[in-house]
Length: 125
Figure 1 (cartoon, rainbow, N blue to C red):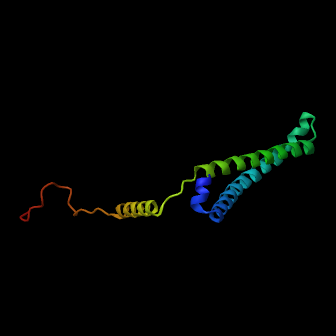
Figure 2: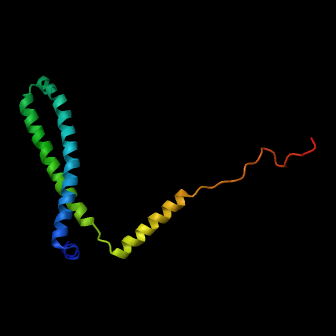
Figure 3: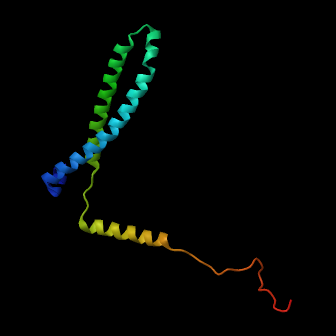
């Protein structure tokens, strides 16, 4: 990690960390809100089990939130550990390869129109 920070610079590394953290947190928050909505829809069933629905909702929502925070920490750490810095030459080579692939994909193959018969039609008939 120290090597990456030295190569990138402290300020750029903080920017990268912020960007990764915000992206991961945004995705996790969306999932958390979906989970909370699902919990809210089914919490009334706890009353049938002789439990207080409000207390159960508080308890389970706290567990969901704690789980989300732990997941965010783990994912951010994992992403930052896997980041590999590339040199300008590597970036240029990858960009050239992408352009080459795009050109190959843009190729269009054409052939002359032919009739369904193997021999050309006779002029005398």
